[in-house]
Image (cartoon, rainbow, N blue to C red):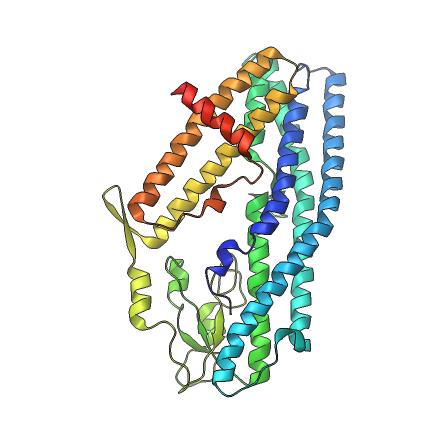
Length: 400
């Protein structure tokens, strides 16, 4: 098994790697937008924009290809670490029951499962990254087309139209496009795919060991703030075969093997072997009850712990969005030759800097009142570096 808090930080190295692609994409879009040199409805201008979109697509595809080797190495390191940790925890339980399971690297079957999980997840990440190229090209075309329509209609002048396009592009950031048409931020999609891949692979390894050791019973992990559908089964013992007279069916009860169930999308739970008359429950009823009933106090209101975690995630997402916006304006100011556009982008930068300080203050107050654990890595746009941060702080001070 893997403890729930393992999933809080496991994907950080991969996210840092993909954040460089995110940075490149935003800067490429913004640079091309501010270099338009004017907006017109002539065929020549439209052809030039389409050619730019083609170059943008090719550039991103090339960068994704360059990223692949480094990404594959990170996936391998992450999966090997997760596999070793999960197996070692389970082995201690088996050994306490008088069994002698081999270490991970000495189990051919478990290593095959690990290898298959690595390859599947690495391939999934490549596919997600490649759809980013297509989504980015479409975002650029949409931004230019909207700017063209705004100028043509007389609703906005050129500077205002391009400033709005830069804002929209920066707010969106790099996105992945799913076959259903649904879009996600690149970082969100990479994190979900990576952690889901780790969770499913290590759970399959745990199953392989349980099969080899003849272990039918398993206990699920538990943690505060579990989604309501998972609270009903966390920290309980189940029968993998479904034939035990005392314990309920594992898959039917937990949804194991489905996206919404145990070890599915964004699930931090896992499971470990349990031996009747030998093992003792890792999560007493009182502990589970406390997890379920846990609340926090915010602005004088009592809020369920799970709802508070969702509020915190929303605040963190908004901070990331504003940092992307600031980085986009910064890139635009550096790329444009138009003093008028540079001044307009600078005004937007200052307004976004004030907004960022307000959002940070709101999160500070939330953390201070509720006592929630601050996860600073969830607030980061990892390429939003010291230079942009200092500019944002200075701009906010000037505007206050």
